[in-house]
Every structure is written in C-alpha cells, then in structure tokens.
Amino acid sequence: MEKLAIHGGKPVRSKLLPYGHQSIDEDDIRAVAEVLRTDWITQGKKVEEFEKRLADYCGAGYAMAVSSGTAALHLACAAAGVKEGDEVITTPITFAATANAAVHLGAKVIFADIKEDTLNMDPAEVKKRLSPKTKAILPVDFGGLPAELGEIKEIAKENNLVVIEDACHALGAEYKGKRIGGISDMTIFSFHPVKHITTGEGGMVLTNNKAYYEEIRLLRHHGITKDESRGGWYYEISQMGYNFRLTDFQCALGLSQMDKLEDFIERRRRIAAGYDAAFAAIDEIITPPHSAEHSYHIYVIQLRTEKLSVGRKEIYDALRAENIGVQVHYMPLHLHPFYIKQFGYKKGDYPVAEKYYERAITLPVFPVMNDRDVSDVILAVKKVIEYYRK
Image (cartoon, rainbow, N blue to C red; front, side, top):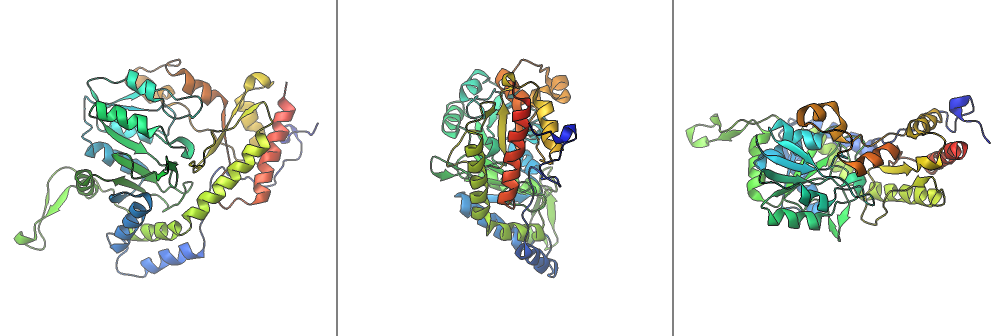
C-alpha cells in the first residue's frame, strides 16, 4: 500500500490545487482596461449593460448589480419588507450571508432541515416552521442544484410570503427546463472569484417585480431621489439607503465573463461527470446528487465514516497533504456561536444537516482545471480512502 504524504510519502501533486479559482484571460483584461481609459469607471453604461445581459440570459424582467452577493441578499430582504419582529426561513447548510441579511434587518432566522438526497432545504420542514411572523422563505440552490422551487413557491403563495432565492451557487442551472433567475420573487447571484463568473466582488438581484426593482435601485444608492425641476443639482434622501454600487470596470469584466459562461458550465459538468464515474464503485464515498440541470459550483462528496478507520478530519488532512485543496461547505449555521447565542440553537436541532456536515468534503471544481488536475484529485482520493479503509 502506497505511503501517504501526511506520513512522509510522496504527494500526488507538487503544488496545491485549490478547490476553486477564477478563470481570467486576455479578453477579460482588455475589457477592464478599456473602461479604465474612459471617463466613466463607475455609475456608467457598463453597469446597465451587465444588468441587461444577465437578466436576458436568466429570463428575468429586471436586474440590479450591487457590490456583493451579500449586499444583494440584504437589499432583497429589505425590499421584501423584512424587519424587526419578522421571521425568515432558510437552510442551515449555506454561507452565513444568507441568514445574516435578515438578521441585519432585525428578523429572526428559522432554519428548516435539508433533504438527505438533494442537500437542499426540505419543503416539508419549511411547512412545520411557518408562523404568523414568517415574512419570507430563502431557499438555497446548494452546490448548483436548484432547490424544490415549485413546492416552495406554492407554500409561499398559500401563506402570502416572499421567496428570495439564494442562487449564488447556481448561475446557469435550470429548474424544470427554465433557467434559474426568473423563477422566484427575487433571485440572488454572486460574482466572487470562485463562482461561475467573476467581477472580483459583486452580486446581482433579479426579479420580475417592478416594485421590488425600484426599491432596490433606491436603496442601492443611499436612498437618493432627484427632482430636476428644482435644479439639476437637487437631490433628496427619501429613505435610509446604502452604498452598494458596482463599478463599471467590474461590470466590464462581468460582461466579458458572460461570453464564456456556457463553456465554463460545460467544463464544470464534465469534471463532475469524471468524478461521478471514478467514485461510483467506492463504497466509502457518497457522490452528490446528479442532475442535467446542475451547474456544479462545488462538488461535495460524503464519507461513509463507519467504513473507514478514521473520521472526516483525518481524510481532509491527508488530502491536503497530497496537495489537493479540499474544503468543507458548510458547518451548519445553527452551530455557529453567534446563532447559538442570538437564537438559542443547539446541536441536535437539525439532524440531517449535522449528519451531512460530519461527512462532507468539497473537491476542486473550476473551469481552468485540466484533465491532469482532475486525474490527480481522483488518484489522491482513491489513495487516501484505500489507506484508511477498514
């Protein structure tokens, strides 16, 4: 049996392969440089062009570019009227920004456990947690697999709730043949470097509701309204807003990245298919749910630790020693100190999410991975699993 790198053996790779990475080429660099040479590097036409491009791609009526996915979540919750005393329901398996957006507005976050087969929020669990205080449901398209949006929308309709879909993992994914972005009341995307396309930092809110769009546009820019009849210089702060704008040169990068989005998604799907095939016969590994509509922001395996001589941490450490930059997505939010202190959550509250977390490891998936990179990941996983197999 081959000696593991963590025990002094030769690693599979000489250099660390990260779990995610941006894909930037010369066209992207030229697009940004062109804007930097103009008079408008912020609040110019590139912002509107990027908004329209994404709205058209996703089949949404309106889009609003903002400074981050986190800002997009915050503004969507604000536009939905989330306020102190309200409750919102979301999944515990997500990045903190999903829940934090509501907390910043004074709301209480109620978690609904996930389904074991999809890793997305279970609509049946959502129904159990409805109350007269519920204002919105925030489903998350975990990993790039759309949540059960039909059932969630039906629950929302029956209870007069707003659906704010956190699709930061799911640009390019589809739900029942329709692209994510034009389905929910509001849909959120992120353009962080590890996402499907990047603007460095950045985000977008998509909606078909003009009232939500107008409210978000107002809040994005300090709550400013103008009245040129009182002078070209005149403006008023009509309500408290934020500075959540995205720059023109970032939007130029986003527009250039959109030219390659379909190729990026196809490459992610090919990598995932390679992993699926390689790990199908390994009984110690559970591969993520497969779907042709999945856009594979991340690829998470789960370990059947009862079949291994060690736990998840030891497998994680061994893979890192082989220079495979594995990660974990995510520690359930209800187990973070803030949510324990703020809302009284405790271990055992969401058993399916907790079981998933104890077994989860994220493998590298990003478009500029070459076939050798993919082979290295597969080789390292097989090497480590074989060593620790009972």
